[in-house]
Length: 301
Image (tube, rainbow, N blue to C red):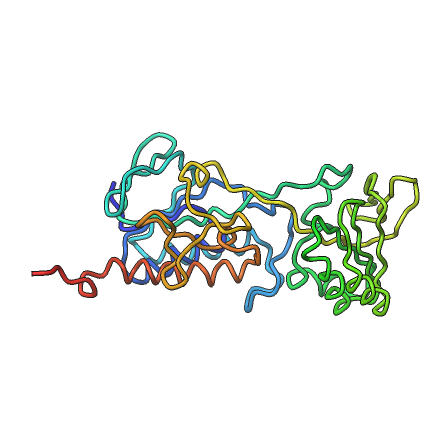
């Protein structure tokens, strides 16, 4: 089978890319290995017309809408490898090989959660990353921010836009600059520098953070930006990366360091959200369509 574009990843980015390319009358194979990255999340927020929609329902609607475009094919299965070059890529699936002129990576990132007792079970419910996605639901509650390096500790100050009750946890590993410490004191942000021993929950919701000396901090919602890694398929391509580890793509074309392979969504930015991933993918898909248009690239005589 031959396609104009193979899109790998069936989240908001991949679904949007398939829609954009399908509407541009390009043949598209959308490969979705599942499951979705933040499987515990129950609602998508801060996405106009979809605020509060369950992620699985959003995915169902998107797939139903893609059915209107005959050149878009959905494949529920993994991509094992990508070989070849621009205009002649070979995409190795579970049981066969398909061919494509272009490839768009929308695989997202893998979250590497800290080894804190109780953390994994609460990730995606009462431990979250994005206040624009979850801050409204956490408003006026006791919020915490678990920092893992000095650069973003001011994030705790921003959380006061949603609640006056904010605690910055350094877990005994992050130094807080004197200027930030002074601003936290003025704004009423509590700085907790003792290491965290474990998290406590009731009814599947966070209730408190237990510190190494046995003390407890009552916290309803904890924010954290975990370390992230790429899926093995992306790692195997050895694409050029940004200092953050996310893929480096062209600002004007969304193309990676391998000609003909593009990337969009969470794997190209640490500023991650459903609507941001969809917007990124719409741009990348439009650039791919532009690249595939022969009238825009005449053959030299």
